[in-house]
Length: 82
Image 1: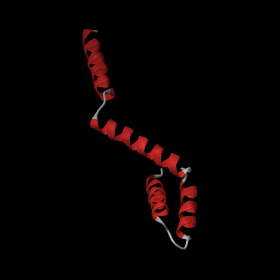
Image 2: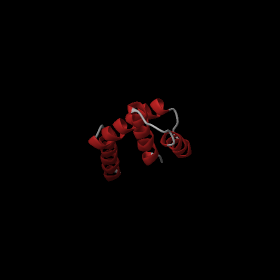
Image 3: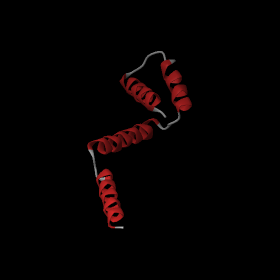
Image 4: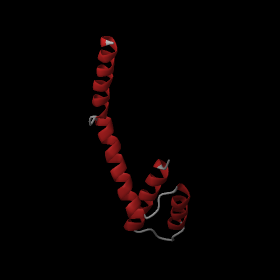
């Protein structure tokens, strides 16, 4: 029984280490924050809606700086959509 308790305690310690803030978890959290900020800016999140917005903006005759920034945000969201 003592051996199982030792194994169990090691598993618990390992799980505690996994739940700590690691560089990968921080990058994932930062990525989620940035994506949410872009979604809030653009106003849509689904790939179909993003493709529709991209088509509309690309159909405009002259794109100004704001249009180009919005287009870049739309393409980034589209490319990273799950």
